[in-house]
Amino acid sequence: MEEPTYDPSRPMPEINIVYQYKLVNCPGKSIVCVRVEFPPNASTPPHRHGGASASAYVFSGTLLNKMNNDPMQVFKTGGTWFEAPGCHHRISDNASKTEPATLFATLVLDTDVLERDGMDAIIQIDEEYR
Image (cartoon, rainbow, N blue to C red; front, side, top):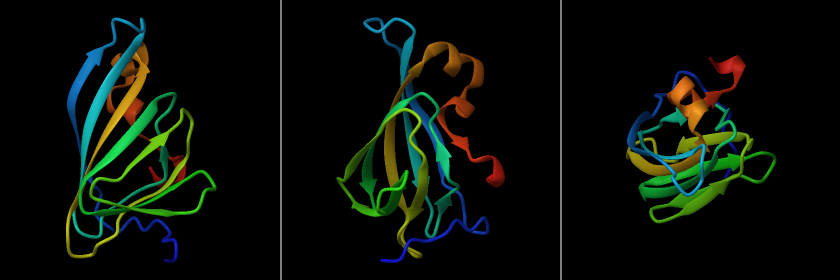
């Protein structure tokens, strides 16, 4: 499958916080879970998650995913991946033009950054796509 290039005319996914807790066994860190709902043909601009460690679980549908310079991967329902701090998430697309897709992402990040920046701490879209 050919790697898509980001097209800003495509719909964006909806991102909502499911839960957020301070980690008492890791002072200064918080854990956040977000639900990312991709309408058909949705695409997220290239982005990073700052200093967060992130893991994702595909709850439904099929997603295209490319991180850093690794080959693009296709993740179906039940698929998972991990993003190390600073990872560049180059492709994050719904593979279907007709069916929605949903993922849950869990991020561990600095509490002070989360409290200061909110959603901007969770997803940092590349400057040229803002």
